[in-house]
Image 1 (spheres, rainbow, N blue to C red):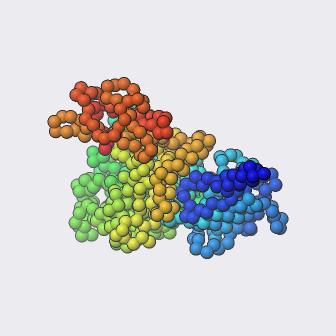
Image 2: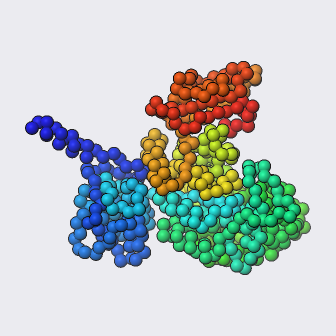
Image 3: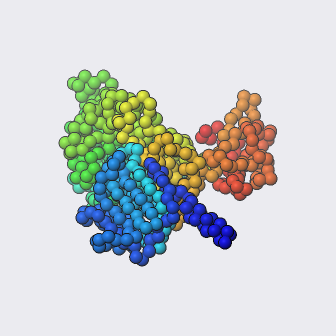
Length: 605
């Protein structure tokens, strides 16, 4: 009898202590319950709102569960729009018990995010019927209103199907801004009906493969067959698709620099009016003029035509006009620019860029939109109502906020998803470094500014070194997990070891969904320092604390019988390379990393 009671108590305890689910981003509050709710053939959806779009959104996110308007349903999933005390427009309250589920939110956005949480509580499946979800109570809302990812489709073109897939992935992790970099030197990607040459000429370049900084320029006689663009119907379709997932698209047309593709189509846009080709790389910078003439009336007619159609296609409140890395050397020798600077009392070419941005802001405002620009738009004086996106560290954002302007923080060292994310010798070629743990340490609000002026932040995937869909996913995930959590979850809840456990659970979800991702966090990290006497000091590291590193310096392949790394060491005379393997829980993880000594001075630290 006593044994039976003990077994029953053990079973009850096991059911009461279900593991905390691996949610990304972590919710504001989560109270574990007892038991779970089983979704069976008898489970029904009670959607307590007459709004057709909301009802459709709920059913799309909980496929296989019929909706019913019958009164007093039992063992139902109840979804309702209603005020929730202390919860804002993107927040929700989710209660799961063994007898039913209730999801409440003040607005449709909150319902959508609550549904994403429910989906993460279940295994990946085409239908949710037959699944069980743990009993709990979640009250949740985002820390920031701007939670974005940027995709550069100029350097390499990504088709409509991939963009939708990317938006799906964003929505799962509660991103709400898709910043779409639609034009740059290497390609113009959006159809503008009033300027057809932008896509007839500007959307295509000669095909090239290889390292971005090494590929050759176009040669005479080569056919520009590589590229593509989105028709206006494509844009409308993707905009609607994003809206259904509570994502606002912010289009970017980069100006006055980064305009070579447009200039190839319309050479009169520059001071020199020279005919150029759409480039395959960035080696033309400061050699060929890729900057609009800010002193010609025709430039502003061009911009007005482009932004008129952009504004009609994108219902969101913002248009991003770039403003970064504009080389102004060609303006200095331009007679039109000299006259404009004299007439307007402009003393520097930086002030001339500010003159340009202020005129463009008036065009943007005439379309009923707000202007966003990279932090270079601060140079020479900031346009009156501009929002600044700070990428060169936090400095530009701090300066803009101190002037009372809204800011989106996206400093490269934390948020650039095109950078190395692990030991460079084990990664596809790129530049600089932003590890997963670094992205997770990102704090968007500096101590010295008003927090309400920091709208939020985003990750940016530039694609000079990202030539295909699978690599775009590889570079985005899992660093976008970290950025999602930074922008949604309370700052004081951040916990790297706990986050990594949840990341590993989501790796399994991505495996089931056939989404590519990087395992770079498992790889050892090698740092080299050359001493004055010519000896090389080796420091080994790892992002995960519960790992052991074993190494060799004699060109053999190390395992856990080799020297265990405990402190920096000097390479023996004549040693050509160091090889390192990481172990966790007695098993090797990540890649075997091999670093050659002659490449030391080129390594990213």
